[in-house]
Image (cartoon, rainbow, N blue to C red):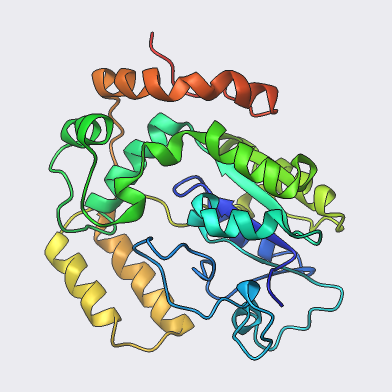
Length: 298
């Protein structure tokens, strides 16, 4: 098996983790383990993992995506994965453009200005990286004028990866517009049940009844209280085998060492980003994306 039945391909920091968990509650929809397999990433990406990608070869002895669905029967099930960086994988897009049996594609888009801010906050707090900017203003200035060079692909390419028109068009052309479902982070926040039901209808599977309380957000950006304690936890965690207990303990410890960010809107930086990013909004609106809740200058 080279491809799952459908893929959540992005965008990063746009609700893909939450959507993955919510869809996985439907017994007919089986998500990969882990959620982000990185199986299709281009070689230049910092999270690239070297696989013998079977979808570039007819050699069936090479590993396929099924390695992430061990023990899961595929008959009458919809298998899916959700590597959020797949949205930008040129080699994957090119491979799918030559096939007739393409997977369905789900793309979650977030107000690009806030997505860039969330990316900055995530990689300076939750998952701090070496070389990250000390302030948001410096980060915005670099990605607009000079480019960021930390080596972390998501962080360095935040501007280009927020030019959604460019990337959605590539996917529309590769798999056909009818095979691409677009939703927004803002819709996931305000009406998660509606978005999940719409996707289930689009896939042609029965709805999984859910109450509003079941739609708990996942992978939310938080402000870390102690970076030293956070780094110690991450370092120790590398040597502890994966298990439900490890996930629970990690979640509890992280909750103790984090707090919700006090969201501040730096108007000058936002306005500079908006000037570049809003050029694609008219096309996105024609494509059915609701941009009405996205930030605009006063």
